[in-house]
Image (spheres, rainbow, N blue to C red):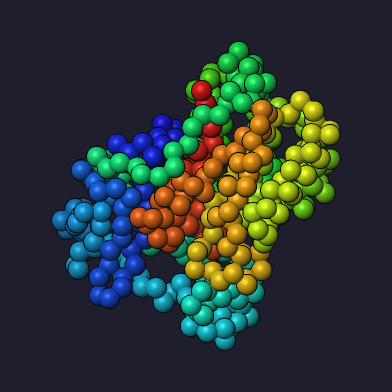
Length: 358
């Protein structure tokens, strides 16, 4: 658990950072967030194979480069894109997709493959997990504790009284695409479980989690289902995890979230709230594509306007933005569209735990 919750922004020792090995222009390499001072382990995403420095790979600055005759598996970008809509439609009509969406266009007129939907090994099978030490410094947004703004919850935690948390969100809050969600190796727990275990370890207080999240949902659905999904359980803390499926700009999303808070508050006047500024989807998806329009990156700025005593924001997306200044999206995803892999899901747990710990 200490490895899972060691904040990535603190540097030092980085645990199982994922790097996709994609061959381009004759070179197969991936990029680490920091330049390593010592490599502790390079292994397959599932943890079943360990690779040897010098034999299987070399490190050059922040790059990990696959050796020409080494054992590291790699692919090229062709498996992640279709060149035109006709190819994408054939995939759509083939019956191979576990979850079927209409073809999704990219910013350069191609279409992304949807083969990884509900099938994360299509992406994670090409990802390495690198554990290393670094002297590098984080240059982006740093999450801070906000638990003092949640006086009722904080009082219970400090006094080691039971806190009941209800998580109300979309598929990312369900746990997609953590390996443990599917029962795949390395079987990392879903991020809500990591978060709860971190709170229990920090405070020594009993924490109960009820996760009522449903994949594919948004705040409109959430408002309509408050009575059944939230009020029934009378939680002390409600964590809201919507945003990925909105398809609206930041101002409208803020208004919807404010209505959701008000609707819950009418039935639970003593509840307090954490609002998650969602992780970000694949940036190559074009804006006209239904619910995957690229508005999500605006949401933290607008959600921060809702903060007050009893309501705080856990800004996951600003941490992801800093990571993506150094690493491509393919390193962070489990489905190549909008779900985090183990690495990014772990970072989500780190951000929310930091917000809730004193």
